[in-house]
Length: 206
Length: 400
Image (cartoon, rainbow over all chains, first blue to last red; front, side):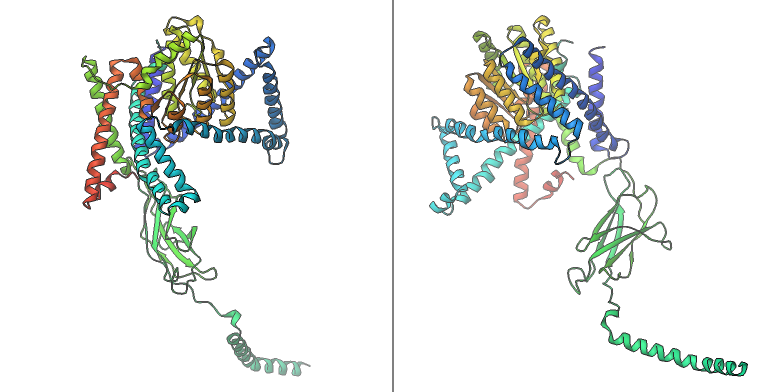
């Protein structure tokens, strides 16, 4: 039964969602919205598990003085302060929670995002080294596209921006669409395997 | 007094008609000379008002369309809006149900009762006066049992399902199926083995989307395979997640894999942890874990966005062998650059079947490959047909 029930639930839920896509008539038209609501309810309760897990792991680390335990103090204090600010004074604009969000959280998040610029530079340096024929082709395409996107390219040759656009619109787009078609087929195949119970890896040895 | 009073009344009665006439004439004359009281000419009415049930819906909707007034975008250009009114009988009272601005010639009534015939009246308005009314024929809404605009999807889905099931049947009969080698999946064992030799943990990053994303589901399936290998090799497995539900699913998947490998004692639920739902907070958390734990192998499997390169470059700096897999085309170049192996798009969904080598799963892969071949044939055929002016195929392939 431990194996059959999850398989049955998967099959019924999968088939209902599949059928509702093709049948606009009630009750099928309501199914998608209903299942999404159920999912949201489950996800909200799972959030409690997530926060519980976070508190447990960092409390244990703090108690055992594990490596980086000082950061656990920061995390638990931040979690507590944001939680109390949100629950106690609400999340309205101009409130304490809003102040913390825009003056603490937002700059930190932006800082992480800004790191991407440096990582792009280091990754590009490695990717564009012309070691093989493919890498040389990549390097040439990258130079043309980059030059086509900056004023210098237009200054060097007024048709360079057009060439850059052509590379993005045709060879690049063709490759992306080929990948997308493969993905769509993979999604259908995987969904079919799961709905029909052929794929049971998530049930492991059951 | 009585005599005088009667005389006054008699005089007033005789003079009253003259007073009225004089008052009327003076009023009309003053009206004719005052521009403020001129009644403006109403705009021309819309024409060809038609109402019909909205197709492929769950009912309750009627689409009303009309030809715009001659004074909308032309003529006096006086139309400001169109008022749409509804009644259940032609002679009954019409109630306004909505309005649309000038230039628009369609309105959807989303509050109709299925099966009830309605007459729709449309009037152009210039903000002061209304045009003559135009009324449609009676129309009623109804729900449909099949979405005709998705017939092509149904046919394609049925064909692909048939191919998948056909090859699964062939696999069941013991027929040998060739699947092309996928370098990224061949390297999974090598990555787990290398981490084991180095005495370092394995890190598995399942992306930042929740369990309602098919990529996360595919990621959980691959996690089961990786966890089983990790259990067999007795190597620690670390799974940081950005969603609580993914954490719960990952814990269950890894637990089952450890049970399956006969190592339930080695399972540590605390190594599958929730970090945060925030995208860059998660990236910072995973980066921190990478630098503290220094894993020997890192797997990135699932849906990733801008954090992909931040994660992969940090992983690269730790010297770990990295295998990535995603169906996000915009993130693939980053993974290709920073990782040792990358599963591109569909390979992510093929991973479980490929790693298990189970005939049933391999059969589904083969069916998928045939589906791809048919798609390519349709694409090539479509390009040729459209090049020769036969564009019906484009219409057929478009989903409404």
